[in-house]
Image (cartoon, rainbow, N blue to C red; front, side, top):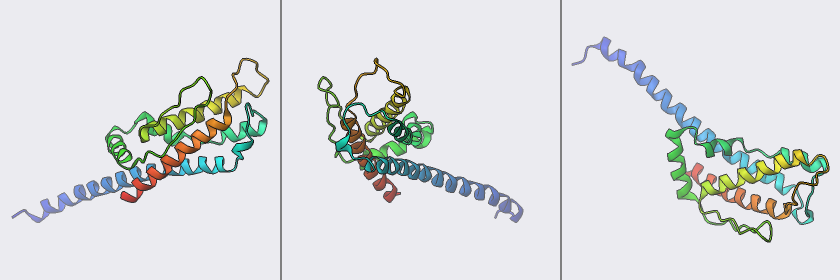
Amino acid sequence: MIPIPEALGVIPGFWDWGARVRSDWINRNGFLYALDFEARLNLDILDALNLDDINGKTFSGAFMELMNSFETSAIRTLISGRDRKNFQKLVQLLKKHWKVTVSLEPEDKGNQIETISDAMDAFRFTAQKIEVLKRISRIAREETVFLKEINLKTRLKNIKETLLGMHNCLAAVIREL
């Protein structure tokens, strides 16, 4: 039989372990909610645009502000895999729930169609395309002759497609957890 003082000494350690498990669970799920929030926020921004009226370079002041309102910090955190312990678990869940629904169009006649094979490809593609638009929009405040024309209509439609796929995948992962 274990003496009562020794048994009582185990309780704080057990309590701390339970608190860490709860904290990890909240942090992991909080990150999933942040990813989903970011995808939905970016989708709402895209839904505010009339994509059919966007042609060629649309680097007006309003468009530049709109591009800079996109969020990618949670997506970039996922891509960098900063939390290795939970990263592999999350990647497995994303792979499990990813539905191949993304059909991208080529942005230029010379470019090949980019393919999205899994959730991580979608996250990488989306972060890259949004970050490029944000940076180019800052450069394009002045008339610049060295900037190549970007097919903004197609790029924004492709971003929207991947964001929808990401949101659907994240919603399924959140439901499972």
